Structure formats: structure tokens, C-alpha cells
Image (cartoon, rainbow, N blue to C red):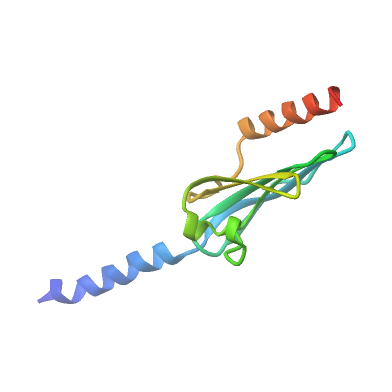
Length: 126
């Protein structure tokens, strides 16, 4: 008899944990005309089940953001697109959006090192 009543309680607890928000990094790194600006990495709670990075490369600027996905914008709708990256070009701006679904998954030192090397390469050869 006790088991019949505990199953719904366990189901509610499991669902509550699944429905919680995800901890993500929030930041914005920019490069414009040779000047690099970085903001501090701040942990924030994102509604839903995903974190996101968004990078933009234009003729004279680069942007690398960590943030919560925006389901109202097709390319940043991680709930529909799932884990992984999407690439798009809008008005000669190369955009890459990557979605991930674990706590603090949207920032790594490897990504930052790659971005820094890419920016320095662009600055030196323009």
C-alpha cells in the first residue's frame, strides 16, 4: 500500500528537477577596428533547458556572446534545434549559434583561445 502512494511523489520530484532552469554564462566579447573588449563572465539562470553562444563575424567586427537562448528568434531557438551549432549568413555577416544543455556549458577556455587567435589573425592581415 505504501508503494502505491509514493510513486506519484517521486514522479513530482523528478519532474520538478527536470523543469528547473539551467545555469549559463552571460558575457560579450567584441572586436571592432582592432580593439578587443571583454565583459566579465557572469553566471545566470536561463529559463528552459539550454545555454547558448552566438558568434558574429563581419568585415570590421567580431562578436562572441554567451547568453540564454531566445525562442522567438528561429536561429536562437535551442528548444527546437537541440544541441549543436547552426550557421547562417545575414547581410554579409557570418553567424554561428551553438546550443548546449548542461550547466555552464556555453563557455570554455579553448573557445576563447580560438576566438582570440582568430581575431589577432584578422587584425594582422587586414
